[in-house]
Structures are given as structure tokens and as C-alpha cells.
Image (cartoon, rainbow, N blue to C red; front, side, top):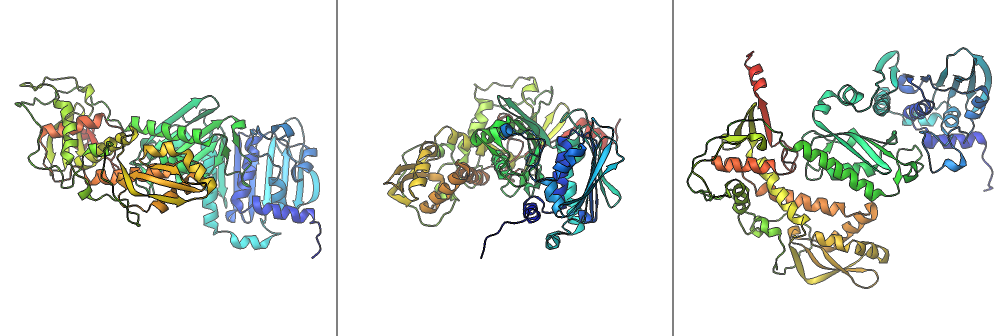
Length: 614
């Protein structure tokens, strides 16, 4: 078959397939142009989900008569020069959007430049200019797109229903409005106003901004602010508390230099930040606005510019994770409850020895401290569960360590009254149904789920042992040899020091093999070969060992759940206060390992309202 050159019209229609997939794509490209033009007011109108008509009106800088003709030519742009390819500060820069849209529709562009007294209008049919005429228009631009995919009708078959197209367009405009609070956005569908956002003077200043308007007041009440600034990187935003999660990641609203980004990089970083705080099948809500030096990020890696690449992904990922966890930890810490008189506890010398074991299963935190374990081999099927028969000592030791902080000094005949600013969770009064601890504070009372609370305490103790490199390892009687290839073997060995922190001891065995000598005792029965292959895949994709970290966190969480005080266990006042004091000094103690709340507070004001007291 003879090779021939494609016509310009055909080239544009092929290119349009990458850029213009549906009405949403048209709106995204045109609204980005309006934002780049400095518009303060943007109106989006559609008919039949955008199939029949899309009109974008703005009051931006406008386009001159001569530039109107250039605007519909491929790779013609006013936003980029040869020296700026690594310093892109605009949303659009390729010069592809208008010619791509024009090649598959009937398009009109009317515009009046800020420096001109007259407006001009150009009509384009299937990529061919029909005429250029004067128009009556104030400063700004109006782009009208009719009969989308008229010249490529096969694309119409792949569009969703009108309601679906309207829904995704609404979501897109919400995302634009969220990161451009100084711009007014109005969205009209079939003559009905769907969205109408007035401009705000400041971004992210509280409930009076669009965060509450778009994500809801309920989100604001159940979220915390996160912010960071250093050198070439800064970000700010809101992230939900672990107790406020969703079934999908659709509520990840992430931006880079005010550009809407939907990238697995952010999904992974945010998910990692919530590791151990919410169930693995749940996702937080987050609005994160990242500002970075344009030289440190490549925005030209995706046809629709929905993804970016950072020069130092590991650094940025680590900062995002640490700052989110820090914000959550601060918000999760119990707030001071004010001054009350703590209960007068009279007791003789107290040696905290429960009358019976606290839980049926057993656990000793010392289990995670490095000792010389007996060697054992592993079966070929992976099982992350650790049986209770493997856990030798009682959880009583763990719980006793909680209590000793309260009773560590020589007991006195009477505990003196203190200022409870140091005790935000107040002091225990009673236990309900052997399940809930009731404590009193100055401005109300607090209800604590004893199992959920102790579950978090145990998990954090276990994780601390891991962080201090005291994880017990299990030597293999016969070291496992795993063939992974020369390149991957080299990559895995780069992480050998990090892997030791998790109890994995590896060595090189030839050019392309890894020799596994020790694995974490926590992993129980393990298919070593599959484990190493999973590790290799994880390193290859993310250049980190995050999945292993998450796996061990998951195992620790399961152990903590089964090794904590159960509902139905009767506790003394001393035991209940010991839990409260430990909660006050434990990160993330306001939610259990599964994201459920560990305590609720009812204030005196709320009580008065309940009983209609004035």
C-alpha cells in the first residue's frame, strides 16, 4: 500500500480524538482559555448535555481580529515561547483546543480585545473558515459550539445519556470554581441555572468560601486544614477526618498550580496518609491545592493535561503524607475540657492486676522487640493472619503499662484535685453495659467505646516498636532464592536497608537473584517468592516500599483488634481512667483502626437544648 500525506482536515480530526472526547472536554478547554485570559466572570451554557450547543462567555482580555484567524490554526498560541516549555504558567499552551473543536463541529468565536473599540466574529465549519465579520460585543469572548461531532458522527455513539453528561460537566465546573474563588461561574443547562457562584475575595479562609458551598458545610465540620510551605513547594487545603470517609476516590479534588489534576500519584499519597486510620475500602474527602515552581513539574505528559510528573516525587509524596497525618493527629487529639474537680479516688496500695484476663486472645507488646526466635519454615500459601496461639503473653501487660502512668508514684491515701486542663477527656464516672465509659468534664460528659479506644492504643504501641527498629524477625532454615532479573535485583537491593526496618533481610545471589534470609515474624505463613515479586512490582511502580508498610500496618491492626479489651469486660474506675489518660497521649486516639469514632462528647449546652432549658 502506497504511503500518502494526510490532509490538514484529517489530521485535525484525528488529533481532536485525543483532546475532545465528549462535551466535558470542550468545556474544560474553553474555560481554561477564559481563565488564562484573566476573566472575572464566566458563563457556561449547554443544550442536550452539550450535544446540540455549548456556549462559553467571558469578560477576559479578548482576541484581536488578526489573532482570530490564527487561533483556529493548529499549534498557534499566545501563551508559550520556545524558552518557556519548562516554565508553563498557563492552563492551555499547546494551541490544540480551538482547531480540534472546530474540526468536529460548527463553531463561532466572537471577541473584543481590551485595547480595541470593535469586536469581530469568525465562523468555522468542520475546520474551514467561512467568514470573518464585525460583531457587537463588550470586552471579552464568546465561543459557540454547535452540533458537536457533526463531522465524526461515530463519536456520538460513545456519549453517555444527557443526564450523565450534565452531571460530569457540573462536577468539572465545581472543580474549576473551587480553585478559582475570585472568578464568578454560572452554569446553565437547557435554560435552567444549575450553578451560580459569586466571586470571593479570599481562598480557603473558612466557611464563607466555596469550600463550604461546593463540598458542603458537613465536610467543613468534619475536616481539618492542612498547609505547608518550603522553598519551591507549598500547599494548603482541607482533608476529612478518618471518621468521615467515602466508598470511592471521586472526592479527591487535587490541583497543581491551580490546574485540575486527576493523578494516581495523589490518590496513592492521600491513601497512604490515611493508612491505619480508615478501612482499606474507604476513601477520605480532600481538597488539596499545591503550588510548585514550574521548573519542578512537567505538565506536558498527558493529552488532556490531567496528569503531571514531579522531578522529586518521593519528596513531595513524603511531605503530603506527613503533613496530612500531622493535621489529622492534631485534630484527633482530645480537646481540653476545662476545669472540673476530678473524682476523689480513695484506695490502698493498688497493684493493677485484673481479676481475670482482659481479653481471651493474648498479646505482649514485647513480642515486637527483637529477640532470638526459633527458626521455622513457611508454607507456600500466603496468609497475613497471625493466630492467637502464636501470641504468647497476655495483653494484660500492655494494659498494665497504660495504668502505671496514673499510679506510678507511691499511692497516697487520696488523689489530690488538679486542674483538668491537663486531662481533656475528664474523669471516669461509670461504665454502661460493660461497653462504654462515661467521664465528666466541665462543660458536659464524654462517652468512650472501650474496645475501639483500646484497639487504637494497642496498634500505636505496636507501630512504635516497628518505628524503633525492634521488629522481631524470623530466620529461615533454608534461605529462599528468588529470580527477579538483573535490573530489578539491583533496584531491590537499593532498599535493603529500608527493608531491614520491616524485618526483611536480603542479600545478592548472583547477578539476577535475591537471597532472602529473614522475614518478619508477624507475617506468619508466607509465600516468599510471591512476596518478593509483589515487592518488586511495588518498587517498580512507585519507587517505594509503601505497600509493604501498609501490609504490616494492616496486620498490626488486625492483631490489635483481636487483642484489645472487648465489649462486656467490666472495668474499675482506675482502669477506665487509665484508658482515658493513655488516649490523651496517643496519636489518632479519636478513632479506632477502622475509622470509627472512639468517643463522643455531649456538652451542657446540648443537654440544656435537649430538655428545653434556658
